[in-house]
Amino acid sequence: GGTVWGCHHPPSTPPLPCLPSLPVLGSLLSLRGDQPLHLRLRELGHRYGPLYALYLGPHYTVVVNSYQHAREVLLQRGKEFAGRPKMVTTELLTRGGKDIAFSDYTPLWKIHRRLVHNSFTLFGEGSMLEAVEALCCDLQASRGQAVDPGPPLMRAVTNVVCTLVFSSTYQPGDPELTSVMEYNDGIVQTIANGGLVDIYPWLRFFPNQTLTRLRDCINIRDTLLNKKLEEHKVSLSVGEPRDLLDALLQGQTGDKQTRGSGVRGQGSRLEEEGICEDHVLMTAAEAFGAGVETTSTTLLWVLAFLLHHPQVQGRVQRELDEVVGCGRSPNVSDRAHLPYLDSVINEVMRIRPVSPVLIPHIALTTSSIGGHSVRKGTRVLVNMWAIHHDPDHWDTPQDFRPERFLDNEGRRITPSCFMPFGAGPRVCVGESLARLELFLFVSGLLQRFSFSPAPGVSLPDLQGRLGVVLQPLRYSLTTGPLNPRFDTLNPQTSPFIP
Ligand code: HEM
Image 1 (cartoon, rainbow, N blue to C red):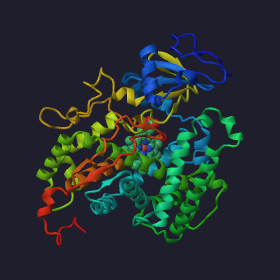
Image 2: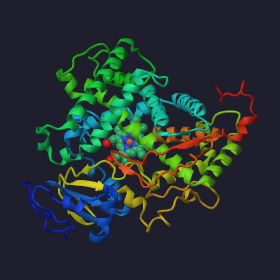
Image 3: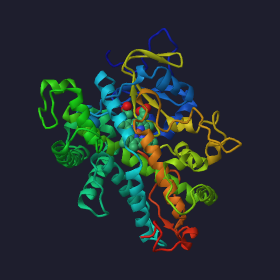
Image 4: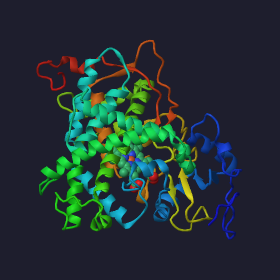
């Protein structure tokens, strides 16, 4: 219905507490300040209770700060809350929701999501192990010097996604890789700054540097992906897909017999009904948008916490020594035997979830949360940060303690209120891929290197800042000395020393 200034709730249920709001501004005055959004929303929960409402500009939005309510939104009534708001930046980015993350919950979206999910299960650890190897060579070269681990990690993770999406791997410094990293970074930066345009869509009619930059980056991205797509169409064959583009092209043709691999037909009626070329391109683009910044930032957090907790780093390395030794690289079959390493990754994702308020959800029908009726069209922000720091569910939640993910016998436990990838119908579609990648990178790095603070430089700041993802401020570390156990290896025969 029409916008009501004040809290609107059907009279049958108790009203949700609502932040004060003004015309046009909504509750933005209450959100002002230096604090990042997830912390501010949590703090407001102390005053308004764990479930409250506010207006983001004109948009009535419910904030969920507790596990109990998150479970209702994501799992118990997951389908009712599986919509996504349309936003100016994301409409530009995804050609009007032809991707997965920002598409509404439709039958076509379900087919699309399943296709992508199935494609991901086809890809093994091969390309990731190569990227780990290349990263180790990179770090080996700067051994003993203070380096910012951000760029090499970003390069490595970008390479993994390039291999996965279009089977290209790049040497450091390759202009195509540099271009991918630049436009991706440009998109990430502008999306992070684009917040106001998303609250007030009419702002897009004013000259807007952020949107201009976003359009430029999107053009560069689309040119590259189009080129890759055309190459794939020419070389596509039946049988095992080489990469995500192949899998999507095959899914597209399998979906509609009339469309051979070389048939263009963009905009035809048939394509409008199914997965069209825009979907293929936007899915490829999204693997970068959703898969690079999240994974590389999580790895940066892992290293930052290990610098603060050298005894944790030591324990991971002892576990790796016992289980893998130093004659070969860790691989996916070792994962079951490395519970402590896993618990470190989990604890990092608990204490610094890179997506602290997930992606906004929207109610597709009138539903309820915590016994309060919630109208169709209501936006819902699930504050995973608050849930991961809730003292009702975690002992000393502000402390970094990987053992909380292990029982007394050292076996894994996963508390149900641990949801760094979300849950339910909108759970991260790249979760298994991301977990595998995190495992291979962390195990590969810690088997070979010890990381310590760069001399004379302070330890990394652990508060971080919220852009598109929650990231640590830049820091530097010293790699090495090479894990002393490897000094006994003959450099000529060691698989690890270039
Ligand atoms: C969605 C986390 C890596 C693709 C999400 C969401 C979170 C998340 C919290 C939103 C869930 C919600 O709105 O309820 C992460 C983390 C990652 C990671 C922590 C790495 C450490 C990846 C990777 C890919 C990926 C590697 C793909 C290559 C997606 C997509 C969605 C998504 C497509 C949208 C799903 C949907 O709306 O249905 N992720 N993600 N993510 N993620 Fe990830």
